[in-house]
Length: 257
Image 1: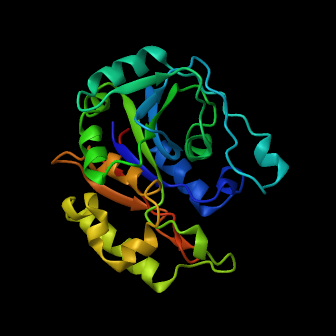
Image 2: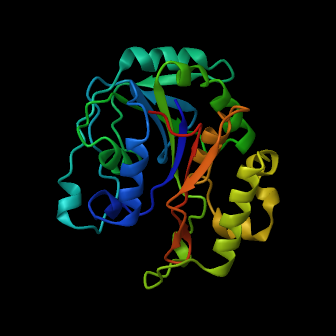
């Protein structure tokens, strides 16, 4: 299976008919239907690392101030406790706990609702220990590589640029610094230059604006860590909005039929 990173942006992308939702729909049409999805979302931060292990994970509405219709959405995808246990067992560099109560947050279901609206594919989430450096996440992700051969679609869900403190809701584009940083990250991804992307604080002052907190950036490292020598890189939904939120998405591995 290919590997994805999605810039998920606002929860409203789950209900609006916009270019970002259409981009997620289109990429799903180009993929072999996965046996399961493992999502690493910006919106599940934990001390240590956990994986969802519920038979029927609930839909978590982890936001406020949005229209009622967003809170009424349910994404009733099944879980897969057996796959969760096997995945936890793959990881030797740290302990991965099984969480039988955690559901799916909007970083996961808002995207999957567009990609797989029938909600029939089992979905797991892996949490982020954001106290750990980029190298920890990159190395953990490398241990998940066997899942690609098992038909599991691994999706990192966050945003390359994500600074809510200085958003401008009236802007349809990005601040100049945000566009420059997004382009620099894309350039390094295309060149397979992962070292500085892992040590993202080394990318200069614009990195501190783009990544004031790490949770939306770290899912990108889970995608990059799984890149193989023959994986093609393809960007889509490549746009920065509201000044400081990047919607840029990418696939590694090319489209399958």
